[in-house]
Length: 428
Image 1 (cartoon, rainbow, N blue to C red):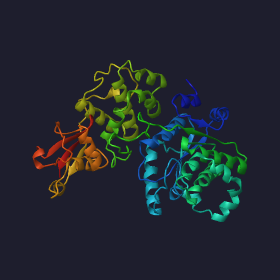
Image 2: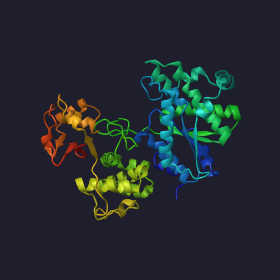
Image 3: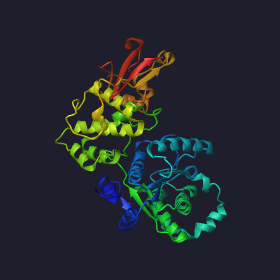
């Protein structure tokens, strides 16, 4: 078996680290407490947040102890990293509510069993320290010249960077210092755009406490078009919350992955052995079965085994199974799912009679947006113009087409966008 650091590298989690030899030694020496931070700028994580979560799971499985930090204080400031303009300022109440939502979601991925993880909120210390106290304690350690050289800062200087956001790096660094002093935290993981902030944290810890600490970044994941990974063809974020992305749509997002990305996505988002993943994703084999396994594993991770089985059977019944007889060997639990033992439940949107009877007329493009198949009516019109929309398997070609009661049979119709995204529309 490969050691942990080699597995992290083999799965693609290691983009940069402060000192590879030191990180290897640290991970081999015994249980290590490490942290990953998540700012609650919304009430749900989306697929783009999952890479550090998967790294945490792998570390925890190997016996190390994650410190899961929700940034109830830093979210009030706003991280400039990766943003072209200032983030909207949320109210304290919004941040606190979002923090609780994210904590519940993260607990679904990381075991809370006694001693196996810590869940913390940086509002518990950052909101209690005085501004002058902070400046006296750590201000002299931070070089403004060095801070201006950070990519997250340089990329924003042309468009304007507020002093509020400029402070973010100091606050994140202070988090590492606090966690090192109170929980003996020795390492931090984060996205590659966090490198400058994370190195600032290691420097602060070393200079204030003399403790040797390390950090490692995870690469930015892009889709086949070079965009940030985690959006549907209609441009919507793929959320972990079922109130924002249905389980079926979540499954279909993974099932529709590009052939060339399947191996890397399985390495990131499943716990299947590396050797098995390489075999499954070989394009000379059954690549569509590999996509089914990817979709099942990712959905099971986020929503549980029963929900993943239902989504798999629903999609397979509607669009066909890639390997109904399980001829492709796999350790995935998908092999145990019997297609005739799972109740099929199509993703549904309930349309109110008032919406249907709107005097201005409900357009198909608007229904696409309402049902979550695209972001807006204009996106819906573009889908129609691209011959990607049908109702009850009949193509819609007029971008101004209206939805009428005559389209509903037994109070329902099936609206389809693209090859494999659809909704059962009911009148409620």
